[in-house]
Length: 331
Image 1 (cartoon, rainbow, N blue to C red):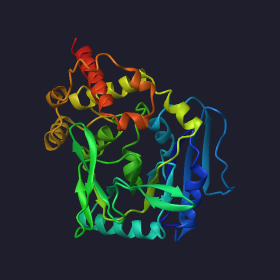
Image 2 (image 1 turned 180 degrees about the vertical axis):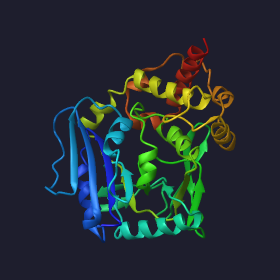
Image 3 (image 1 turned 120 degrees about the vertical axis):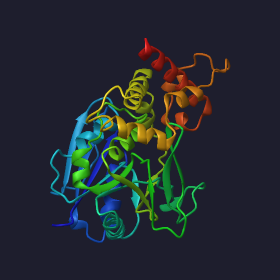
Image 4 (image 1 turned 90 degrees about the vertical axis):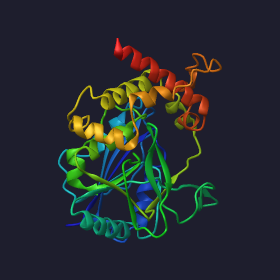
């Protein structure tokens, strides 16, 4: 059909894939127009149990988790037959009628710009309590959140009520929606494990002339999971080497060491992007905290992702690794 949507998901020892598929189809107005491409990376072989459906293609990989970049790159076919692509994390709860509402709003904005736009935003977190969806306490129900750069990292802020959408310079890796040509041109970088994925992808898209927007509408909620032993196990396998590799890719991308498929389109677009968002190597260095309190503490990387993003001590240690990476590259 003309308006088919491909939903691409990539899990890493993920326990909510089947629930996400069910929520998507149950809340869609046109479920027959939806196809799935799912990558299920499992270290224990306990793959998701999905209904037999010709519209669901699953790539089951028995492996130690290789990161979101690797999984997402496999979830997007090189040649896409559907007209639109929705790339999401495999732990989502969908809003009723999400497919028609999202597509209608997307087409309206696309027509204003006269080109495919990339929809991405910070989705409200939620939990399931007594089989009911509960919005996270720090999110105002009904508000949508746009994205922006705060230093080298992506942050979020509410979209004004009177606006249907907001044009932005940043995106969120767990929620992207656009026409198929965008995903065929700018593919997910399989080398990125987790860190710096959003910064690098934002640069690659914008430097090629693509518009990034947040819609004043939440088609789904990002499920805040209760960590199982399996979840904790794979998070604990995020070694220093993985984060150092991601930081090295970030440094190479934003210092202009290479251009092309995995970087900015050219030097002018790179400099324009950095200037507009206040990203520079000087800014990066100025944010490094030399406090002796933290010293050479690197063991945080053996903790959970949740710890990384809720602990300022961790950011200090990350900047320490950034500094060492930059120094090594300057030799």
